[in-house]
Amino acid sequence: MAGFAKIFKELEKERKAAEAELVRIDRAIAALSVLAGRRRRGRPPGRRRRRMSVATRKKMAAAARRRWAKTKAGKARSAA
View 1: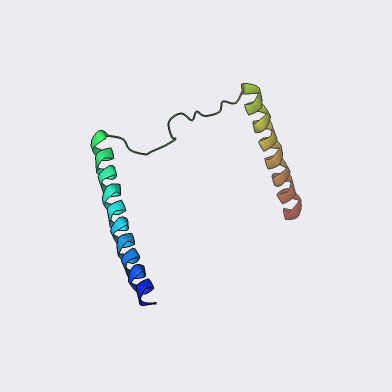
View 2 (view 1 turned 90 degrees about the vertical axis):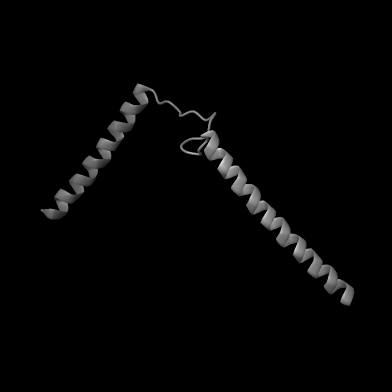
């Protein structure tokens, strides 16, 4: 049993060392990214926005107007 405890402690020590190494590597990557001018903002490269046709935009606008008209009509009835 004592052998297992020793192995367990040794593995925990190695895990802590590995975690410290990961933190160091992450910091180095962040520093190099700043120096290279690569910042992770916006959409990832390679992904383009979908384009909607004019007809689709008109249909969506008309549907939104109908929803608003329905909402306003409901409010007018409840206020009267």
